[in-house]
Length: 375
Image 1: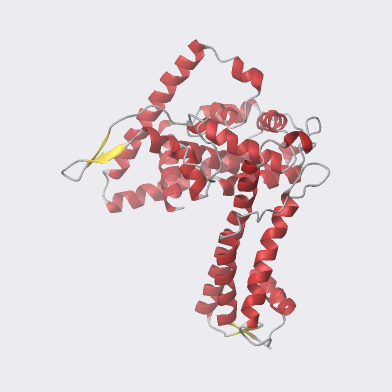
Image 2 (image 1 turned 90 degrees about the horizontal axis):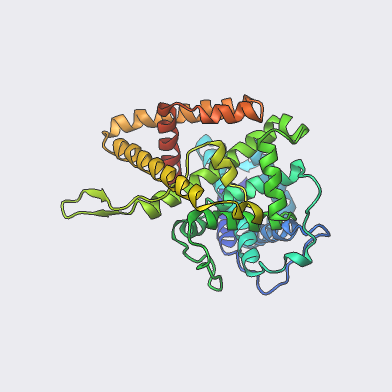
């Protein structure tokens, strides 16, 4: 029996609603494997919520449809097969695909929320989880971590936390973090623990990967593309939070806007940015002298001023001019990411990132600014 489109759309709506409420742990102690990895526990929560939504939906159809058959159909729809759907309208099929993609996005976000909220509540139990401190990072762990981190920094509550320290959960003390970078590093450290890794060990290995010193992993183009997307997402998150908190804007009586302060922002994409996105070891933190910090602050101020100029210039353009600029910015982003992926890791990649011309930097800033606003 063909499944009505109305049933499938109803399921997607119910599943999204269930998933959006999934961050509560309900007082259940999480389970982790022998390597300290809790991901399967969180993944099972997401699956259970989706199955509950499906069963609740089918109850409204008097048991006319079997849950297993509908699950098989959902998999087929994901591959573009609509033969068992009741209805042959391309527009309705498009609505189904859109609803499925939205539910999948909500599921990824629910997974990330579940991970973060639980880690924040139990951030003192690392010694009981046997986190990796010696073995090399593997491909599956890197893919898992990068995907989780990319989704995590897209969450509204995480963006608010990065911006000004707004607490993500009620019983979480966020006053210990004074800068955007400290808050972002804290999020990254939590996620490394979730995948079973000591944050400092993982951070050191990410740095080696970027520098081209992890052998076969550096030759894996798909993996390196994922890692570069991770780096880009972290940079976007830090940049936008820094711009929001340190370029405070307010409306004047005539309706225009003016900048009242500028103090800190991340660079767009440089080797320094990549290094800063890895959680620092205690030794590296101690190595920063007052003189180095003063130099860094001057550099950051210069970058912030440049970024603000780009921001103002873009928003002074007409709607038509902005559309053309956005199209150029998208092309520049795609071209640069392709160059980054095709450039061997190590000195050549560092040189590429250091030698971005000013016009490309401007377009990359605009692309990151506008895509983040759309998200």
